[in-house]
Length: 239
View (cartoon, rainbow, N blue to C red):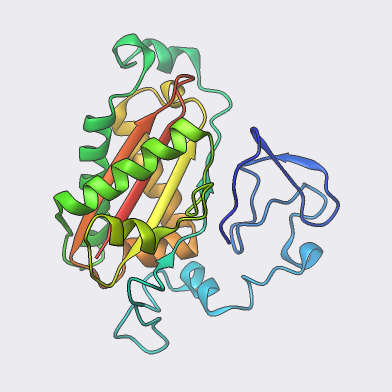
């Protein structure tokens, strides 16, 4: 489910009530209000699907294991659902300690730290780390920059181009996948390390993102962009 962001809120899929973009069902990633947050209240498809096993058996379902999802080709790339995390309040004392100079996270440092956090998550589960790939990093950086410039959060750009189109445009021919992340005020996340930790934590908590992060890949590229309001956009492309 790839959803473009409209402003800073979404609508409950059941009643249409405005809800923060962070109020998504952890099983299917659909926006839901408090009344309809329970899976039964919005006919959640995630609870009954194979992907729900990520919550009971965190490392089940990878390629090569029973029930694993086969990887697709560059024309049918597997993409994780959009993780739009809104940071509403951070304790003032935290802001006073370790805040980035100028109140804005550094994209390059954040990208490097996300690489580290991804590989830490993989090695903790007995998986090989992903090597950094410059071509994939260019794809990821271009998409994050485009989302920041054109104010959207989606695997599909406003002109209709998708993940496979971006891989083709950058001359990448591989089995691949993409994760994306957005938070509207990155400066409130205190520092680059905290941003990186929260990005990877959010991906691990989402079945689609988790499958990509822990999938049978060997290379990754991370791209980070910061908009004029301090919003942080992160893209991970893997092969």
